[in-house]
Length: 440
Length: 177
Image (cartoon, rainbow over all chains, first blue to last red; front, side, top):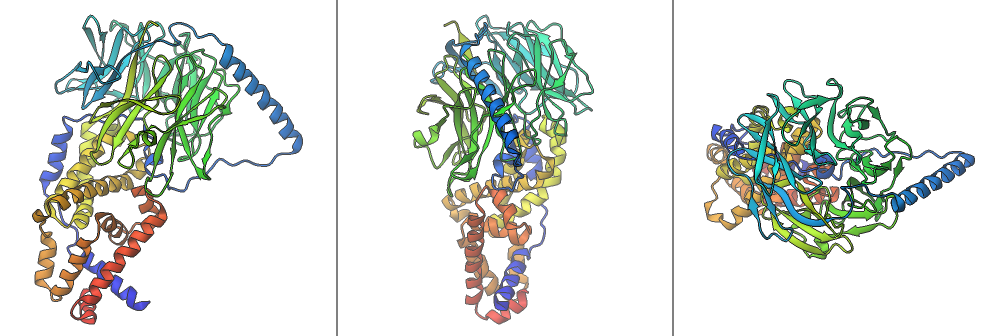
C-alpha cells in the first residue's frame, strides 16, 4: 500500500510541476471581444439541477398520519380530482384561446429573430446588425410580434405588425435588463398590451412593467420594492400571475389584480431557488400549473388561482431513480398539460430529457421521447427547453442539442408518439420558440 | 453575478477576468498544449457569457465553470486527435524536464498521460490537482459516481505503470516526491 501511496505522491508532484501559469492576456481579451457579438442563451434551464443530476438533494418527506386523517385526505383528494376532471372537460375556452391553425414559428438565432414555417421552409431573418434580438413572441391573434433588443443604447422592446412590416421600438429606462433569464414579452389576451419584468441598475430587483402594443403608456405595476418577474395575464385579462420573492423564503407564484394591487402568494408548496419559473395559466382560467420542490426533484403542480386545490400531478420516479419535472405548458384547448422530465437513464447519457403529457389531473400520462424515436442518440438530446404546443394541439416544439457539433435545432414532434415531424437548424439559438396562431 | 446573468457585459468582464487563470490552468493540464489550452479557455469564457442566464445558484459558479472548461478541453482534445502533428509540449513541462534530473521518468509519465483519453485526464486533474472529491467531479461532469471512480482508477494505474517502467523507479520517485 505504501508503495502505491509513494507512487501516487510522485505522480501528483509531476502533475503539479509547472505550478500555476499565467495565461496570456489575449485569452480573456479575445473572449470579451467574442461575446460582444454574442447573445446570451436564455434557455429555461435550472442550471445546477440539470447540469448536476447526481447531486444529493433533500427530498420533501411524508410523515405518516393517523388513519382518520388519511381518510379525510383521500376524500378531499377525490373531490379535488373530480373537480379538476370536471373542469378539464367542461370549462369553455374563452377567445382568443382554443385550437387554431399553425402559422410561422419565430425563434432567436445568434442574436437575430428568424421566422419560418414549422418545416423550415420560407425561412427569413427579421433582424440583423449588431444588436441582440431575443425572445420573439407572437400575439394571441397571430398578427403581431414582439421581442427584446439589447443594443448599445440599452434595452428596448420592439413590437410590430408582421404582415405590414411596421415596427415600433420602445426604449426602456437606462440600465434596464430583462427581469429573469427566461423573461418573455407577454401579450394580453386582446393582443393590445405587453407585460414584462425588468430590473433597473443599480437595483437587481425586477419589477413588472406594461405598455400598449403601439408603444405608448409604458409604466410599472405593483410595489417597486417587491421582487417580481415573469408576469402573465389571466385569460380574461383581469389578473396577473407572476414569480415573486426571488430565491428567498417568499419564492413562489403570486397573483394580483391587473392594476397591480392585491398581490397574494397563492401556493403552499415549497421550492428551491430554481422552482416556480415559467408558471402557466390554463386557457380556461381555472387552473395554474407550476413546479416546486427540491433541486433535482421538482414536481409539477396545479392550483386554482385563488390558492385552493393545490395538487402534485407529475410522476416522480422512473425505474426507482428520482426524476425532475418542470416547465409545464397547457395545450391550446387546455385539455392536456405537457412538461419536461429530466432523468438519468443510463450510464452513457448522464442526463436526458423527455416530455410528458398528462390530463389536468395528472392521469393518462404519455411520455414522448423524440430523440429515441428518431434514433438521434448518442450525440443529440433534448436541451431542456419548455415544451411549446402547436396551435392545433397536435405537435410540440423543443430544442435539440447536438453534443458533437455543439449546435441546436428546433424539432417538432407528434404529441401522440413523439415521432419527429420536422427539424429546423437554429445553431447558436436558444430561448423560446413562439408559434403563430392563425384563424382555424 | 446577478448583473451578468441579466446581460450586463461589464459584470461579465469582471467574472471572466477573475476566472481566466483558474480555467486556463485546468485546460493546460488536461490538454498539455498551450495553444489548445488558450482556445479551450476562451471557449469556456464565451460559454460563461452565453449560458450565464442558466446559472441560478451563484455559489456554484466555480464548479459550473469547471464543467465548461472541461467540456471545452474535451472538444479541443477531439480536434487534437485529428491534428496530432500539431501537438506541442507545454513549455512549463519542457523546462521542468530539462532543468531537473529524472528526465526519462518525466517523459515516461508525460507519454503515459497523453495516452490516456482526455476524459481520464480530466478526472485526474480535477481530483489530484484541483482537489475536488469524486462526488463533486461526478456532478460537474454529469457522470455517475462509479464512472468517475473507474476513470480515476484506470488513469492512475496507467501512470503508476509508467512510473514503474522508468529506468530507475526508486530513484525517480525520490526525485519527484
